[in-house]
Image 1 (cartoon, helix red, strand yellow):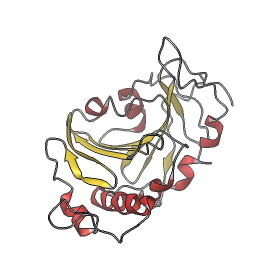
Image 2 (cartoon, rainbow, N blue to C red):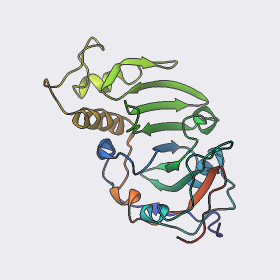
Image 3 (cartoon, rainbow, N blue to C red):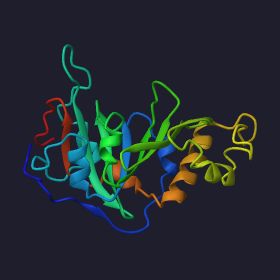
Image 4 (cartoon, rainbow, N blue to C red):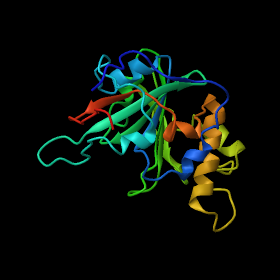
Length: 223
């Protein structure tokens, strides 16, 4: 890996919200948003060596890296590209990443974390919110009536206001036959507005961001 070290690209401007993430499938394994720590610390809490970042690379360049998602008898490779937008650090996950299992670690010491996983091979897409070392609430997108965490109804007012759920918190809104992607977009829009989350579409594509290994032994040399 190259010497990207502590230099992290930031993103200026309002971005594109996060509703558009409803349409991603195989591009990434997930996106972790964290408020209260810089991007390099987010990578470290996800398992990275903070001194071993690459020079900034695009999302397209990740496909050219030596990343083994499945390795018989060992761990798969997990890689993140990190940046900052709208007051939140973010990590875009590739391969066998660690955002889900390290959620409480990432959120310790007062940090807020929102984690989205698209799960195209094993729906539903999932969303969790953690704070100060505890998962407060989570649910599957388009399955929001089944909620978990220490405060499972924390985001219920936002879901009701966005017409994701009826006032009973159980009945889903939306017209019959509504496409799943549309329902996911409404939920992500509600969560994004609640926390002020935004991510430009370029972050998944052409925007150069430093990359870190968070699991396994990926080859992160020049693509």
